[in-house]
Length: 458
Image 1 (cartoon, rainbow, N blue to C red):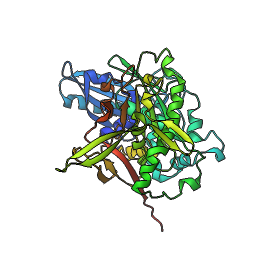
Image 2 (cartoon, rainbow, N blue to C red; image 1 turned 90 degrees about the vertical axis):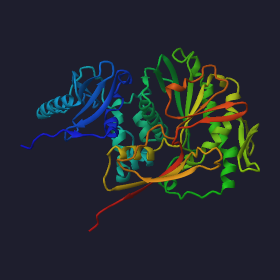
Image 3 (tube, one colour; image 1 turned 45 degrees about the horizontal axis):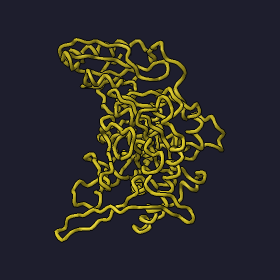
Image 4 (spheres, rainbow, N blue to C red; image 1 turned 60 degrees about the horizontal axis):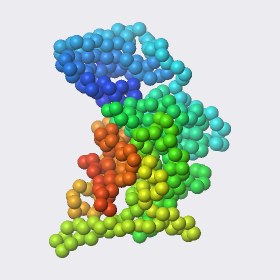
């Protein structure tokens, strides 16, 4: 019989497995110091520092009846990390020896969502769902999503059906938002049908409704594999000037008409609409500028003075027009828009994001090599273009769910969003006719992920 050995864990993998089982309140009284598992990860462990009495705590977690890792054994009051680790190793060995894989909590109801066993007809399965389910290149995304499923609350009752078929993009966007909000250590209230999320912290509540810019036609293998047409800077500018503001405007205006702020659990609290662009292949890599222009009704002109300093001048936009369709610019200045506190946006709520987050947490096929390249903000006040970055995605990476997320605050909001609830993202506000941004040190605008699947052919 081989000797038991407790294995150290990377916090990224521990976090991916534990997920929302971490109560946000724990961070007020303790600090995690180290993470461990047994050989098959049926039992996880962590050592914490009790901040108040400066003693050490060891905890053990195992899967409950629904598949969620939850606390089932602990010891507190230890005087050193060594004592805490010794206790953890002994108890992990003891529980591993029992062969037990499920640690009943007695309060679990229902079953974990099974996202990957089809419940719709084969002909209705979304091509992106099939790729996610079947292709080794996306195994990292599939595995990390499978770990999220036991924690995710299906408030509509049709999440799995939608995820597998016509609603794949929208449901993936909701799952991404859930992952980001968990990372931000917010308390969840998902007892209500709408909006999609009600999050709380510091005695404050924010309602969040998710929506996407969808495709006009159904996704097929042909549209997925269609080559991306290269656009000139002039063509991109033309699309962001009118076409994309109209595309963003349609779902945002529809959500405005829902009047969520009149619901009892929303009334008197900030209401945020979280939007992502899925209208075409890789469209999210370039369409974000259009959203900013549409929300505030301004675009910026750039020039340099005689000393080479960058001068930015706002130019007011009255309308956006494509053909016969004309809409007013400045979403935040439209009737009833004062009830929308902010718009949340990122180009990163995609399968590629899940794939990278899964890869760096040790999920997926080892034969898949993954590289990422993109642009990020240059904090030089005289910079007119973003910087470029590129790296291989592996377990040394430190990407977060919050990376690249922006919140655009409504200057006319009846209930402004407390920024302290969302400290990890970029915040944009409208001040004296100009957009002012407060950005994290590393704020990505867009990126692409390239995958190479190594096979051994004989």
